Length: 144
Image (cartoon, rainbow, N blue to C red; front, side):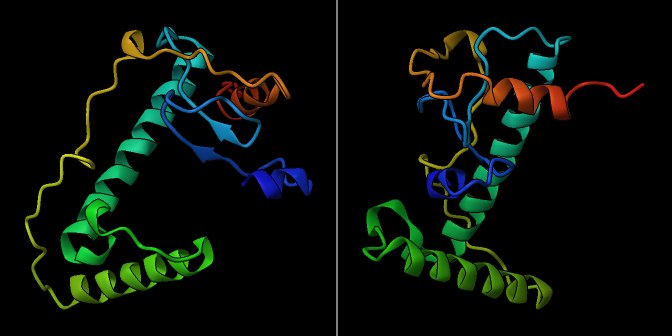
């Protein structure tokens, strides 16, 4: 994502929790954002999306043990991406065939409740402090 941003793609983002620094290409929740504000709407959408992604990862890890954390994929990012895509395709085939998913629970991927007060947002990169603001104003403003 960083490379794409540097190459001029400023309309693609990766989402993360606030354990990561804010970057122009990496969006994190806003600590203490009030729900009725644009920032609150942005943060709520980000948290919902991340939760959905975490659940999907948990399902894939339940079906394909090769992607479990303790069985790290020791490949280049490009090869890992291809493995993940293959797992998703195979999962969809299994789902259509109504094959059961292993009920493996991994604490690493369990969804956890979002608590903005507990999150610290001290790692803000000021290389483009307006990137998140532009995103919020573009996608979370009511167009009434």
